[in-house]
Amino acid sequence: MKLRIQSINFDATAGLESYINKKSLKLEKFFDEILNVEVYLKVVKPESATNKEAEIKVSIPNVDFFASKTCDSFEEAVDLTLDALEKQMRKYKEKTTNK
Image 1: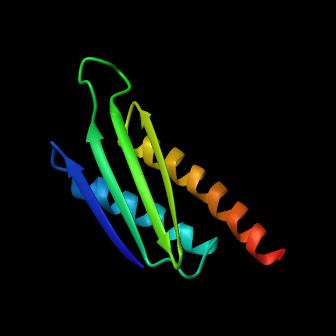
Image 2: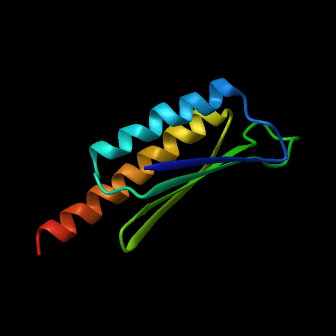
């Protein structure tokens, strides 16, 4: 699994990148064949409180999963986005194994 973290209009800290790395490794529990994970972090409208957005795209053979969340912190946004991706991956796995 290849992990690519891209922070748009700011520099992500090493702590944030290791947090994302650790959390994204948990996706392998749901799907073994993950090719790559792309994480995009950006600050949206600095004047509001919830201005940290995380977009994550997970690629497996023949399918891409995508989720995006905006929250108070990047950690919270990443957690919620990964939860949404887990749900999508479980649903996909159930559909493909029931055939």
